[in-house]
Amino acid sequence: MRQELKKIEEFHSTYHQEKVLEWYTKDSFVCRLLNKALRTKNIDLFFLYRFLLQVMQSQLALHQEQSTIYVYRDQMLSKTKQFENVL
Image (cartoon, rainbow, N blue to C red; front, side, top):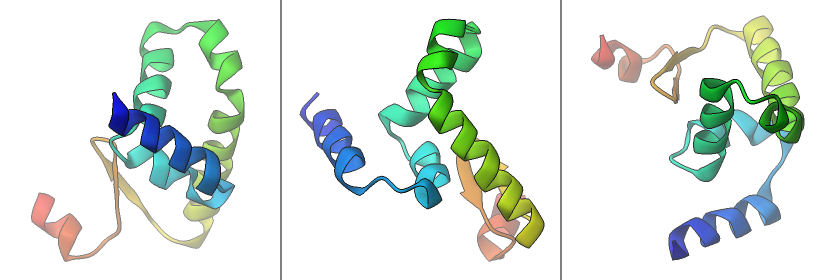
């Protein structure tokens, strides 16, 4: 519980839109909360987390224009040896 509070404080003090995908791919409350909203299809949670979903969509679109990215089980990977090792 204490570690989660530290992560929430870190998110509050360091969050920038450019880092939303990094926060989503970390083992953090952001990933768990968004995944719960998506799994349960809870419209109230969608509305609550809409700002994160909007920023994630725009960051994914931006990355798609710049280069190919691969996402595997909540972890963003670039096309490097790290990705090739997963295959």
